[in-house]
Length: 518
Image 1 (cartoon, rainbow, N blue to C red):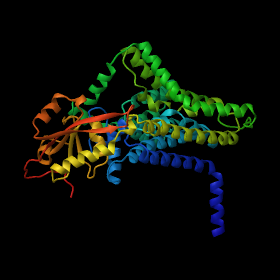
Image 2: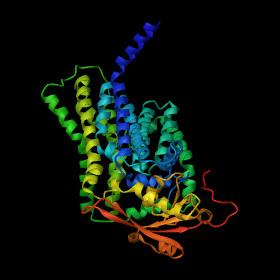
Image 3: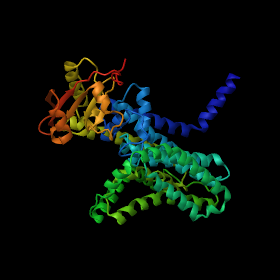
């Protein structure tokens, strides 16, 4: 019996060895980025630090964005006793890995087992799925839900009578909407496919779409309610961004150039594959039955539609409004590209040989990307003393703030009034984690009220270069105040960080400070 079980295990491992290798790649990739992020930089990325602040409280919306990324980090911080640099990277790259997992699931519907893995590995080499997935932000968190939406939509239209796929499609589209509003452009591509192939003539498709729409609306309803209660604040922020106009030709050139650069990270591997084909290390595959020509044509059209439609719609607002187009906004739009490249160029080649060479090239390229990213962003700036974002003296700032507070107050520090970057860096290191009241504005950080500041007291921290009238008044009304300077790097490439600070002592209250931890 034991012998039989062992044989079954060996048979399973032999059959799914390639898949297990793919999962090992995911695990090693995630661990490597997490450990490097925890031990090499002295600070987190700008967007990750913003999420550290936003995730301090469960909210159904924020003044700039929908809530899901912050809610996910809120849960992770609760599980791991507060935020950290490594946890931020783990959350970000974890989203990337889940997205690639769904790319693999979609690729398996279209390609053979081995070619599906080839497609995933090629996709992983696009910059949006390696070093651009390092910051934990709304672009990164949208990746897994967008990839899942593409997968469940394909499954739904292939088997429209199965309502579960339509239900899951509505669910992940709703979660994607709670991550980033740009999912609407991807959803538009689904309707292009439905119209292109006249799938609306199938009653099961109509019923499935209705189910998806209902589930989608239920999922986003708490956020919609929050939007209505808060004057649709993120859309005002978006409108302000879209009204930042410029020269259309220069914006378009910069946008296309940036996309080509980020896509070009897959070029060395693709060039290597071409060389292996030319040198005979990868041969033509034997003819197999495969899919029907009709299904193969549909698959190609499907991939082109969900890849090109969102990109065209994103560019459309540039030509209609002449507004700026942030390259990071389309991070999730290239998810089908690796599958499409494999379908167009590699499906006729021996999948075993192709997978072997692509795996080798991917491991090498990913290792090079990892090393060069941290060398260029952290190690080299530290060596030359450059004041770069990831070398910001985060721990030193937190220690200084905590030292000043403890020298003046007996109660623990629970509230910081500051910009989100400075306050977020302090909260990253102090435990219990102090809440950040961003720029003393409750609309930016509703988790801290005026009554909280009275009951708990607050540490006011401001860079003189960013002094506003709000901070000026806070400092003028404070009896306990001062300033300090921290070195950020060293001469000649470094600079000194100058901060003004003040302490607002807690006032006597019947209820006490609700942020005080026992």
